[in-house]
Image (cartoon, rainbow over all chains, first blue to last red):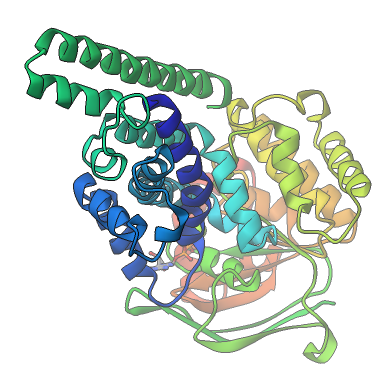
Length: 207
Length: 241
Ligand SMILES: Nc1ncnc2c1ncn2[C@@H]1O[C@H](COP(=O)(O)OP(=O)(O)O)[C@@H](O)[C@H]1O
Ligand SMILES: [Mg+2]
């Protein structure tokens, strides 16, 4: 459950966050500085607040209430996507902007449009972006506040590893909570090791 | 599409005039050198000519009477900007925005790689190449664009003599193919070998513009004399003057 929700949320977060971050990085438009500040601020959104806002939106009287998503895995995906998308967008913005400083003028001299430049730069920094994506996944899978509020921690339905851990801790079943904690930790470590391996492979292969 | 008519070009940056009422008429053919001390505004001039920076005042016009459309351009920067991808993919970027078929794009890229002697390295990672090879990737990009005007910003500044010679051969080949070339270089031996005329730039202004031989041997302006005097030890070493 944890994995599926967090993978789905990270995938959606990347599909939105990477293009948005890349365009904010290289496009010049009025209000851009404000967008950058807002993105960076959203990156640090408290999970519980996101959960609350998504809860209100999805609750029966909320604007998206008719979807009937509340206390379903769908609601957890929505909440984690809201959590993760700004993180991906802000990190992408920073990474692509740095690459643009190095390559941007050459790309413009070759007549590439804003979209073509965004695509080229995202491709250039693909290995650094993979790390950003994993950071997003890490945030999604490790957080408990948002999924608890909108998912409800229903056994076998919306219970995730993190919500199970907090529940078992409250019930006093510390060994079970700890065991779950170790599994979660292992997942995060494996994911990060994969990221490190990818990066060093990329550095050797492409310089 | 040429000559280039530059009138009153003025560009402010960091609170001062990087280009200051720069005015020159640059001939239709051959290689024109842009020389002058660091910070004189040479790179900025090339960037303005390529439309990468917008001047605050002044005009750049092309063709007799300044009525032609802007020529097809290519720019080789001092530091080659390569993406983390193969050589061929890096060169393909140069024609990505061209309104031609995919087949013609591929053909142009292949011909350009052949021209600079990198056909066998096409699949190698571009950033892993030596400095001289990386600069040849930059020239392959330029070649693939079939430019009428080529802007070269210190294209051999960080290369060893052998690599410099290869790049100079490519510059001559491009000129012989009919491309007008503006060459920024501190290598006065190179300027003497390649260019017909030279513009001496000092503090964003034209100090002097004339035939290379005459300017190198008998500079008329104080700015050109001062610049050349600083470079003299190098020149005699290169067997010029
Ligand atoms: N965008 C900019 N902002 C501030 N200063 C700039 C900018 N572009 C160029 N300059 C300054 O203008 C001067 C001329 O730069 P440049 O054209 O690179 O000179 P050159 O190529 O002749 O060495 C330098 O002092 C440089 O610091
Ligand atoms: Mg320069």
